[in-house]
Length: 135
Image 1 (cartoon, one colour):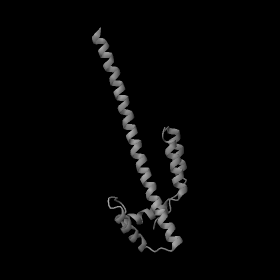
Image 2 (spheres, rainbow, N blue to C red):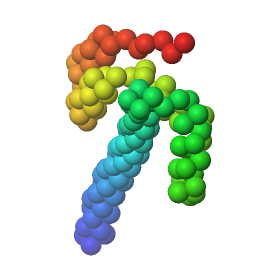
Image 3 (cartoon, rainbow, N blue to C red):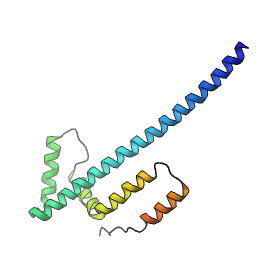
Image 4 (tube, rainbow, N blue to C red):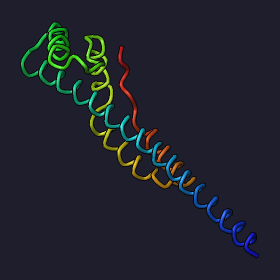
């Protein structure tokens, strides 16, 4: 009888461990996705800010190179702020207006608990937005 109890406890424990592991993996995926979304939004804001200042202050394209050097000088351990990447950030901000990003944020919230109906509906809604050609 003692062996039967131990066997039952081990089976129950195995189920609990599996449930915890599954939740941990799900949480890790959500954490990575959230971090990626935050970085993308940061890149968009940097690009948008540069475009805004170019328009408002009449900055030329050389300012991007100077800005890149200044950022890398002030924050030498931060990667991703080369002249080329800052130009990409500007292109990203131009290609995706704020309204599209807001809609994407709404989609992310709705997909926290996805269903086939939600996914189909959101796919249709997202396909209504068109991206401006870069060239």
